[in-house]
Length: 283
Image (cartoon, rainbow, N blue to C red; front, side, top):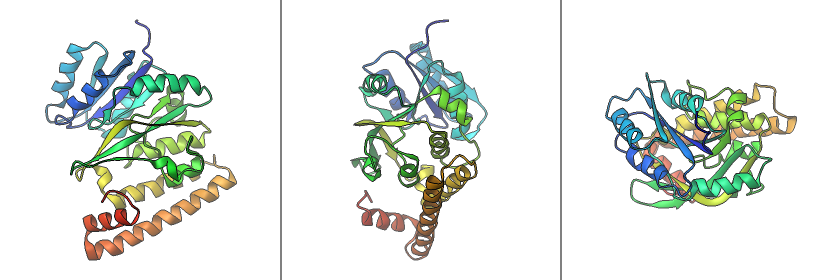
């Protein structure tokens, strides 16, 4: 068997025919060549599987696994369990890695042997053509790293995030029955005391469209609150972190109540635009 690559890039893909080519092209354009790409076709009913297999035929670093639909958590689990590297890269089938992503992370990871989770800044691309920097680290106490209490309030930009395979094994993989399974995954990793290091360079692009599951603001926040409660129930949290978790759940529930009241008057889309404007975000 050939030596394991430096990075295993994992892509869950469900009915992603319209975006997958651009995602794969962004990986093939990396300035750092020592990678494999594992695409999990999660029961697609369009041309996703054929497109992925076309790329695999053209590039031996690309492998395709097909399965019955299990959701993005199940597709990530399948891809990661097939990965050969100790360093796992997350990216969705409609997002992009910028050309120097893997090269910059290769050096950064070598500089931070104490960490097991690595992320960078990135861009949000919107339907109207607007591109904005994520900049979530400005909400953290220390912009160079995110702690568990920080994560309760502002998850790091996880498109293109890298983590060691050990983290996946310790956490037990991604939950397959919830919305935003990546958030719970990282909460659990931090609860198990894995450390995070942040590279303050935009290295990936996340598309934000009305069709994405993340566009359901109330559903996302309900999942955030439930994920925090799930971590609270593990018994892994210190008293300080537990108190921070309780405060975060109260804040999220208050946010949900406000959104419901405003939504009844303005409608969900106008409510989201109003709240984003008040927070200084793209509307």
